[in-house]
Length: 249
Ligand code: PEP
Image (cartoon, rainbow, N blue to C red; front, side, top):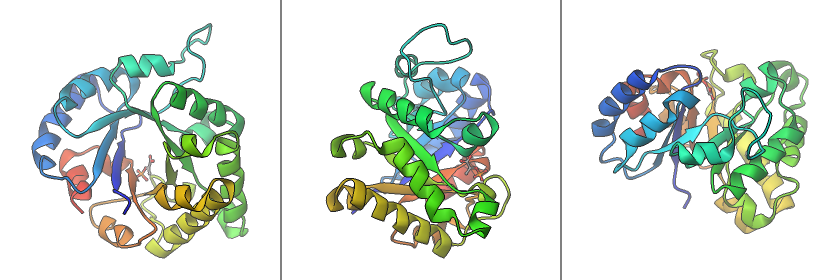
């Protein structure tokens, strides 16, 4: 039985004060939500304030990106040990906005996955196809390339520490959710890749989150699919009430 994970990606939203106010609202709404893991991913400047507010609860904090080096002349970057110091337990890597707006490559994502694991941070690795790739029947080919690109150098034990998020780019922030069946088909394919690359046991333990316009009114249908082990939520995670409704699907 895979325990669901509901993760909120705040993107470039919320100051420290707003993060504290959000957590104060969210905590009582999910105080009895033992059925799933809850993760919030604030921007860098609000990580420590959010981690502080989450203390004593089951909510964990993840960052939205990080550099693979421990330190160095990398202006504007943040390292994995810095995230640990800020109170993070995880880090989102390879989000489509990083891949497409900031030109992140599979090669760099693989280095970040390695660095996260070496620093005891759980990577939440995002994969997903663009609309024209889906329309050209390239979805599986793209997923395979991104999967292999991020994970080829990992051992099976490393792999068991990862969360995977399937986020079709055409569904992110567009209000156009993948149907539960479309999402489940991609998840099944990703699990097959995990089985081929690692083992049946690791593949069946792998939790694959769906992301792309998840809202309180579509989470139930998505979670009814056995292949869907949770959600990575963008826009609808910014409001405590809406995020809590998704958590309590
Ligand atoms: C995301 O940012 O990972 C995401 C899925 O965004 P949204 O829920 O707004 O589509």
